[in-house]
Image 1 (cartoon, rainbow over the protein chains, first blue to last red):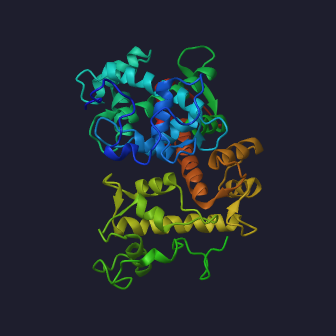
Image 2: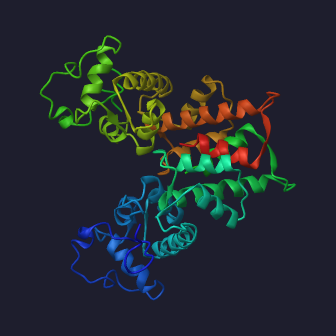
Image 3: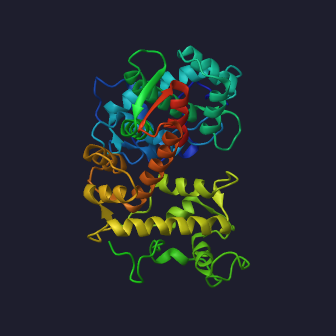
Length: 204
Length: 204
């Protein structure tokens, strides 16, 4: 994978037609607001292709390409929008976008750290290292399971969008588990309906 | 909702262009096989728009419309394909399709039973009745949670594709729970990694 000639850029433009239809220069639209960084504003303008002032999952997906040259998955784009879409409209505005932009950049930094061979995807060993760094000690079998779950095509590697999804899922489930693990011993006792609520509520 | 003038048809054609591009009459392609019912074969031919002999989630989605006149969700179509896609190719052949066809029809019969007002979607009360019939006793709060989870747009109703997804999820999680509920008392004790495996493994 190349992360773009200008360094590690989270928003790899998806092809030459990326900026089609724009007459205004990046940053000139919508009205500038001092609270949004120029960089986030510039990316927002490029991603918001219909210039609605809102970005939906489809627009986000069109703008994001992983290390395999594939667009980010539906799941990952919907997940990322939903995390910052406070009014459940399915879209985010420029202020919400800035938070998403920073969020993605943080994950990309983590991913880049563990993508030791710079291939644009991480293998089992690199994923295991990443989780250790995040404070998890998972068995090799569980790491294998995660890789297989993340990449159904069984390439035994995880791309950056798959990585974001699996990390968000594990964070959510871990938080739900921790709340119930009152003795902090890694084991919980849980009833059927509560189990279903956690399982369904935290799933992407 | 109208379920089509010809009765309760699971495969409502999605608009007039549905059968575009076909010169062969339904049933004439691919080579007939005695093991596939003529009805399933006919639907397969119509859904397989590119005549590849395989159906993917996009083709399925194009062919299925719920009671709101919306295409079935991405999630539901991917889920249904994945359930019968034995070689994890992302597609199903006509034999796998016949199983899916029967499967969808069974769910539609269940859905129709509980859609008492024939609206094409079911409300909390109807969903609660459906689960009771399936042998579940859920609290009103959990039913509310399910409806909200199923329909993020908060219309307080569940369409047939959302119904299929929620039922499959609950079946999967229930099976995983039951395997661990050795005393059959509705409570399990579960470790962190096993919890994550169930939560991630059964999620759609």
